[in-house]
Length: 330
Image 1 (cartoon, helix red, strand yellow):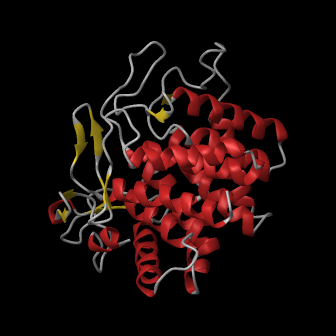
Image 2 (cartoon, rainbow, N blue to C red):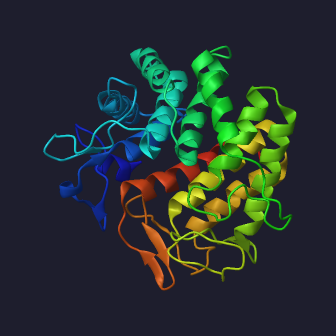
């Protein structure tokens, strides 16, 4: 966690870095704070520093919420918000973080996070991935509060927003193109099917995740969708590849394994870890063992050496899942 700690100050989590050095001029964002809360709150035996950091980033999310339940995203280093509350991806990720904190946080954090989550869960976003991120928070809430109505309704609405499978058996994906954070869609279907007792939806999510894992693998290693997305027939590999794509795939595989017990999902998590260790299209390690940071992207010639918050959180989240599997003997 040392690089994550170095990117954090008394306000929040600095978004960008030049190499390993934080870039103060870019300030903070809710997207990264939410990812950090998810990671830190599910840490099984946090140190005092990690527990304090989880509380600090949860407070950042609480501060970002507007009167209608939406969230601002960007806070300048000068302490001024740079946007108005909305329901974009950052709203979804904020609810994911708050839902996790409401279940896994410590002390006062749980009640404050649950109240903030419920307020935000009354909104709906027109963006499918924003709904999906929010649904992951709803799934966390339902594990501890199975009759929590805002969470149940949000999870059901997010699953419906994903839409039907594609008509082509070679491209069953519910969209004509793979975009970003793709694995979050099948993860929502798996969780919704499991928690809302809809076996068909759960099985559909598992099928789509299996297709995605196969589609994003080449010669035994992960070759994820690049920044520009991917359509049927596009050449492989594609660059730039983002660590967050690996992390969301590891998240989905970890959820699938926890629900189904199928060991192929545990293998998916291990494949994600291997990507960071150099089993990727450029045969280049995507983490800095000296700092604990994750590199910002994989290009055709190797890593982008900057170690920003998003990439470092992607690294830590993926290895956290792997460590849990090892502790459980898988």
